[in-house]
Image 1: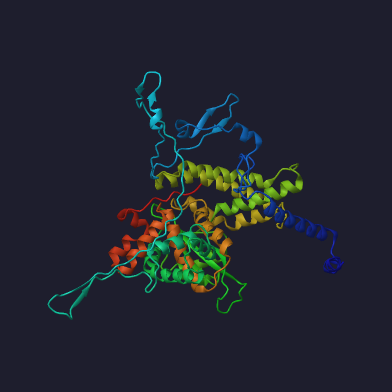
Image 2: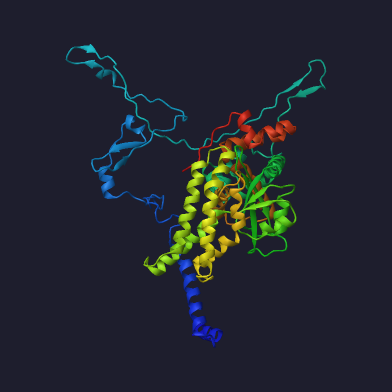
Length: 523
């Protein structure tokens, strides 16, 4: 009743048309919330197949009775095939792929007992004619051992007072038993696998090793200080790029000075999408223009970003160009399409679907020319993409006045037109891609990890997370195993390398100079 009275007081004296508009707006907002909560997260257009992707990857996700009944053992020859031959009905049966060739093999021979290696009929020894090999996968838990560092001492037999001892290598964390491999293991578990320190503490407990989460947190802060020279070099290289991807996401820091524990802070991410990728995370307590300017000293290229108003405002302070993100435009039309289909029950034409069709054509052209030379890319975009964009713009202008600005489609149209000059940048510069998905893909591991560890206790912890996420994400982007890479730099950095040696430790240079394992991205 209180809510009803509030609404009556708020809208008393409103005309019928105004009340209808309010109802339409509230219905639209409700539809948006329901779509975000319950619909598929992937922005799939109506023409794309839905497929049979699993929603959960848990023990409880059992096979159907038919699938269980049809399971058969697969031979080694079949296991090497990616796909089985079609059945009579045209469908295909999935085959188990062979195990990766880089994994070490341990041979286990299954032989006849000596008493059975004799032919009872002819009274002669059996002759070996061949062997059949099947491969099974074994997992050996992490190997934990104590490294005993023995420093040998010597003295002169002639003078009792003269002693000489070997000089040990510097410790990465003085007066600590932490080794580079241990620190790399902890950092990889948290910043690659999203495993919070309190869970790692439990894992160490199973090995009867007492490493509490407070110690691990201090170690992560210490090593983040150690890697600052590498991060500074990466930042210098990034500022020299012609195009930088940039985005930001929320992070909760409990003890940020001058802010409530529940207030938002931000992790800014910048990226170079090239042959030698760079992914740099930076923690800032605010999402302000000042925070953005602090990240871009000396940059004078093109900034590829979303529609956040701070980015265009940077042009008054630094000589940059802004490129818009078509994925954000598509996302708004996709959401409008989902909401309207639900409300209209697919009985009315949907304007959002027309917009998605134009955008789909643009992406098809980009896919076609992806690996061509820059001159050819620009030529095709000018000849094919630019006319499509002009048609799209004319269509948007035509429907803008015919739809409610507050409707889902109206908001999508308004966003697209507001970003239009920035969206055209890819038709002028071959180095600019159609969207900002590259940096968003590298933010995703941080978001997944954040869902597990929830917050950073202090700004120091947030800065440490930014530093280590920068290293592991850049290593992954360059095809380097993060644990191998972190172990390498944690060994080399305490030796105080000169600039030339330091440059060799950059993720995109290290793979040229050190035998590092290759990183294989999960599907």
